[in-house]
Image (cartoon, rainbow, N blue to C red; front, side, top):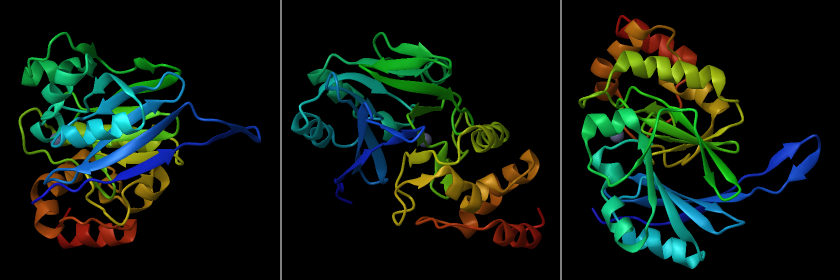
Length: 261
Ligand SMILES: [Zn+2]
């Protein structure tokens, strides 16, 4: 299937005490490759520095976007090391001397062989000019999955999709850990945060708020790891495929009765 490339510019506006603060950044979005991957380019307005999140599939297209905006690619952020998220890293490095950032746990599990990566454990703030990128360790889909919070936007990789979440089929994944991670996001991330997922599995909603996800993401309706694990590993992929849409708590309760969860 040919790659689809388009750009959506998301500009964040923060309202603080009735005063509008001009954001320091923009996030540009590309959808590339046969698996509907979203590649995000975080642009710092003051320095024109750019961080590419999960460079993959079509680096020419990614670098066309950065040069169109006059950006200097100084950083590469990896949500995790599955092939469909990192297969463009080497090609970016051929053109730009960028610093790679990824979780220590992910580097140790996959040994991707990056030269001098900055290894993270969660809680760090990556400074991209005047833009702060907050690092969250969100294991479950893989050992060292990460989310990146910038202003009121959360880049979630494969930890959370719009109305879905990452599978637990590969080494390093653990559905019980993913349950705990999603519960933590549900309870700790503000409801008005915009979720920017790693794949476009809900094309009617390429991004969404945390409030909408709490209402309609089936994986956020569970209150225990046992049922979540059964649904994630044995039931979900048999009864549901993308494009994903919302599932209410009532519909989910019906599913649970049907599948004896
Ligand atoms: Zn993945």
